[in-house]
Image (tube, rainbow, N blue to C red):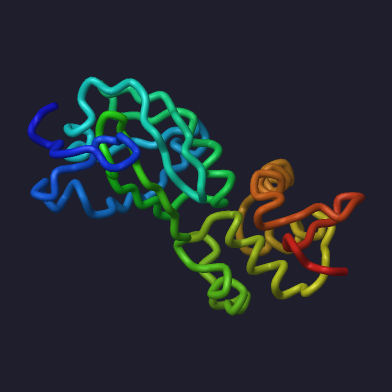
Length: 198
């Protein structure tokens, strides 16, 4: 079984040796890159991937979900991470925390944190918000929070273009990417926060 596994839990899953170095047990924060989002991948840190040598799949655990995803050990890449990114509304610059829970099968618990929480974003005023530093998702949240009503994507594009260079196509793609978790279309090109009542 190797020296990193001591016993099996009551479900028959091999669990990590309690003496395993702390770095394998604690959550690893990963700053999410645009390329990872576009490709739906997650790159595992080298020190953690060394525990996963020879594995070709990994169980990703989040929100009561146990998703089995392909893992390419030679490039430390978990593929098919799109479901997690969509469910958690992850954007470039957010952090995904991963924690190795077991080996054989490899189980990794994942959770995310936004660069700024939704509540923090809606409190920004338009002039103090750093439009270039934050993702388009965050920029739309700030703008919609100031409008306090559903807005047509054309109006959103016009208002956001005063602060950052974006195309209307990228804006619409972003609105759909984070729908229905953050935004929802109300019809005829109008958008609001998910769960808002008209």
